[in-house]
Length: 172
Image 1: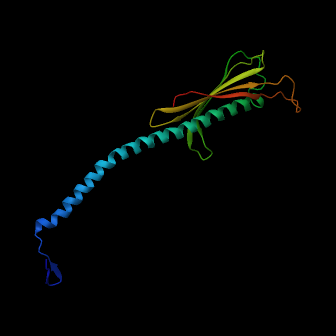
Image 2: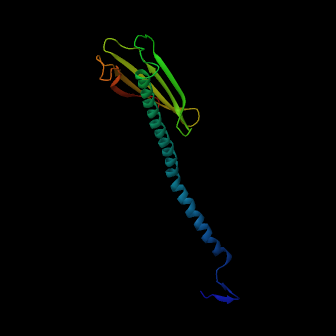
Image 3: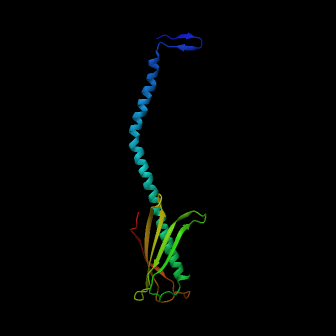
């Protein structure tokens, strides 16, 4: 096919219908690629939601562990020192637990069972919960058995020590 020069624009022997075919072929190729990519995009979206929930579960477990540390601190050095004679549970709720920067992470609920004089133990259960997608939450719980040694440690204080630590199955 010869092209002729008409001014500065080359003129080809194709008609207006032939020029539109490239656009039609490109549109068909894009549509086919979109049909093939749609299942992958759907799976990627579902995976993104699962990954977000897993991250919230790790945060909830960290909050539960922080709740246990708070309870141990209160039993050894804080307002719960000397509560071995009580027959009721000690409870504490830390709502809207935040970071030093002010961002709210979640909530922690702590329950300390009464002192067991038979084996000198106490059981702490702490549950951390983090909001996930609106009103729903991801929760993780930790159960810890503390033991109070029968003889005083060298500093003279009878401090609780961790005897066992278990992660409980909570709502994930």
